[in-house]
Amino acid sequence: MIDFIEKTLKDAGALALSFMNNAIGEQKQDRSLVSEADLEVERFIISRLKTSFPNDNVIGEELGGGETQSSRRSRLWAIDPIDGTNPFLNGLPTWGVSVGVMEDGKPIAGGFHMPVVDEMFLALKGKGATRNGKALPNLQDMEINNQTVMLGPSSRKRFYKLDYPGKSIAYGSASAHVAYAATGGVIAALVDRPQIWDILGPLAVLQEVGGGAYHPDGHSLDLQKLVNGEKAEGPVFFGLKENAGKIFPLIEVYPRPKP
Ligand code: IPD
Ligand code: CA
Ligand code: CA
Image (tube, rainbow, N blue to C red; front, side, top):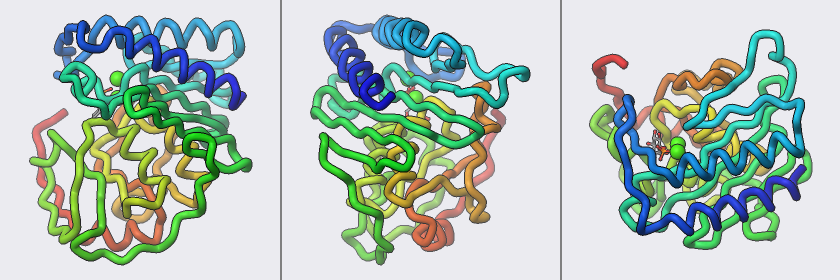
């Protein structure tokens, strides 16, 4: 399964890259962007999945799908063909292809690949996680000082007041944020209202190094609630649980218009 994910991510990344600098974006109803590249890459990944795992469920950001009531206990793959469509369309390097698979509400394998910067994150449950083929170590508790990096919201920053003294960086890709949260280089990835395809692949990686996804009240994110494409209640902290308790008191969430 992990070889399948790695090869699919590599091939899908190369396909996406072939569209870069020529793709034209359109705004979807939710005001996020989509291009022909997103659609082509998602079709490509789905066709690979249908050949190799014909009995599994698949949900993709652009073409839908998801888990049906009758198949709640079977495997579900979640695909984001290009996470970071904005940087992709603007010629910036911080986008990638995200593929994850879950069973009974838990990630069992996944990965995230950023073709421009040549980053490949991969994990198989219980077998550890790798970044470019090198094992990632377990996350460590971190102190917050003015050099501590947190990956935070970009456009959705207006819904938050961050009283965070360290560095807050936004790459424009939730998947990249969650993947980098698994490297130990940052204290957290704080993601506003993620959807399953944004996070499942890199969450498989994060979980292998001791991290997880937490709400402000300390509860773990329930992936089962996201299997039909719903947005999680935000903000969601991705990282080591001990560090979530240090970050959330520094964040004030403003009320926002629905949805
Ligand atoms: C978006 C990116 C962005 C995050 C949005 C996502 P897309 O995904 O991950 O960083 O803030 O919530 O929808 O549209 O680039 O696949
Ligand atoms: Ca996305
Ligand atoms: Ca996308």
